Amino acid sequence: MRALAVATRPISEATSKISREDESGLCLQGFLLFSDPPKADISAVVASLVERGVRLKVISGDNRYVVRHLASSIGIDGSRILTGEEVGRMSNDALFSRAGKTDLFVEIDPNQKERIVAALRKAGHVVGYLGDGINDAPALHEADVGISVEGAADVAREAADVVLMRQDLAVLSKGVDDGRRTFTNTMKYISIATSANFGNMISMAAASLVLPFLPLLAKQILLNNLLSDLPAMAIATDEVDLTDLRHPQRWDISRIKKFMLWFGPLSSLFDLATFVVLLAVFSAGQDEFRSAWFVESLMTQLATMLVIRTPGPIWRSRPSPLLFGTAIAVGSAGVTIPYTPIGGLFDFVPIPLEILAALLGITLIYVTALETVKIFYFTTLSTQHHSLHRASRRRPGARTRRHSK
Image (tube, rainbow, N blue to C red; front, side, top):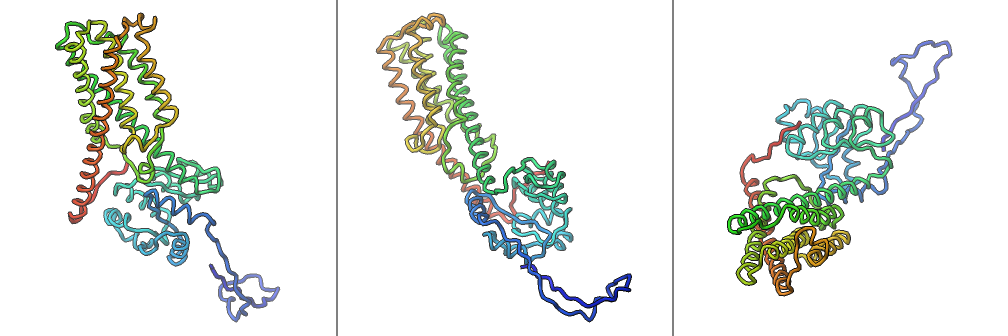
């Protein structure tokens, strides 16, 4: 409770001016108690954000006792505190060092809010700032994601990136999940596309060196790309593993490169195996070769989408109905096209059943190899990540520096 004492004394009606000196000889009438309790569900919201790896910090102009009591009542650790006076004495480098380790910033003036947000961003954190007053505008603008509410001051709403239309902070947890789901599916698409294209580039280059004819015609390549793009677009609707929702993620181009270098050559290896089977075993002609490789290339691309869309075993993570249905439809269409009049428009010929059976066997072996390599890849990646994390913790003063914009 915030308590105010109320005291009175009679004043003559002839008194025209009342000064501080008149506040003497008062009679205590009682106390006014003010309480601004947190929302009933805020503790659950805080717990849900912490569960998702989001660290919560409070920046307030109120005194340390009020802020600490509020923080403890909603599940925020209040043991690490910095006051506005301490922040004012700190250089930017000192604040950069302390900000990430502090949970409560108390007795803070408006200018210091912006400094704190800038220090957190400089320390490598992605910062969301929630505020609704005029004094919050600089901090809202400085944050990676400024969040305000519908009833906030106009300046705060203008400075914010996101305005909550309902007085319900649970939407923040949903926003975190939606953002991570979108990011994860975007990374799936980029990883699959780069590895598939890299593998196809190697295969096409290798085939061009040894074959007396083009391995695929331009219109056949375009048809392959068109068909494979349909399930690729459905990746946006794909299910996301719980582990991807529970931990923050960042863009990492080096991880994309590693992914491409691991899985692209694997695809090329099976393409080359297909070439050997078609030429050495079945003595396929030019049109048969192109028709068979078109089917094999399309089937392996679809298999790649379904297998490496999840770091875990494929049977434990179901794809979205749209992705799975589109992949099945496109795969069926790809196998059927050489036997239809449409296939003739693309210079395809019917594929003998024994070659089609061989292509199916190659695809099944490819799926098995892809699943094995995937598990080994993600296990290696996880081991390297933990090793780097332990090494950085052992080095005195080690930290990651990222400059704010």
